[in-house]
Image 1: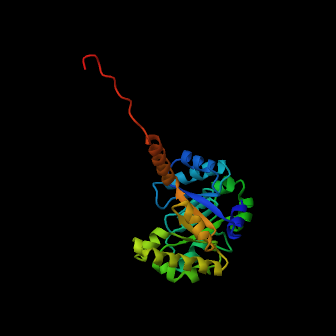
Image 2: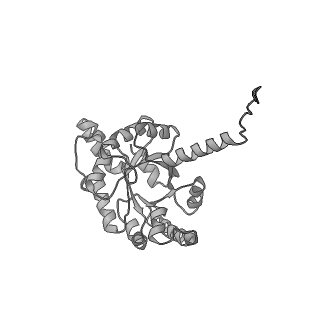
Image 3: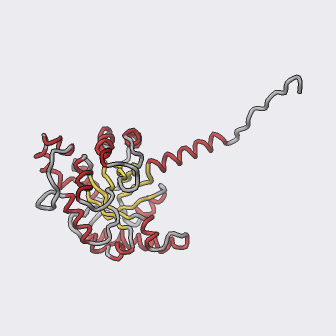
Length: 263
């Protein structure tokens, strides 16, 4: 259980995938591709709370760590993800150090936090509660997502919060917040991303970022990022389908019909 966090905070290069399709089969198929982890996207998909456990379970079958991007900062949402067996949480729209500290508290048991104890799947429904309690605080990955202009301004304080393991960049929302989503804003966005990565590394935390394309991983790895989420199951499904159809249609010529005797 602890290996995933050890690799994360040790800045090992990790590449995961967002899971947005609300069905265990999609998670299993993704897990068979052997990503370093799967992040179940509870924020931006039609995944419901009562589906989280089964999606995590589908990832566990193939021994791929599953974390959950929770919809917000509510302790109840964080608890639901972790109680379902997730190995970590990704909290969106973190713009202040106070928000980051509250997310850490909700993710850790006392004395490091305020997470509640219950007979959940994570604790083997209560039968393994003592083993889980002994290891959970040292094993759960806490990632906070910086994706606003306010978060950019406060990134040094956010990265300094004790208990934050990963400062994760959401380039899409960040570009909109900075009014840098048009092509001419690319340089402004790149400078903002570099600032977040530098602040994160300064405080000894792992820097992460969402990458829509494989080549983006190498680009930001050169700047010091080590924790990547590459696209999503829906993006890969769409891209593979489009590529397969295009290849199938290349040089495709319908057979000529023979004319009948009547012409």
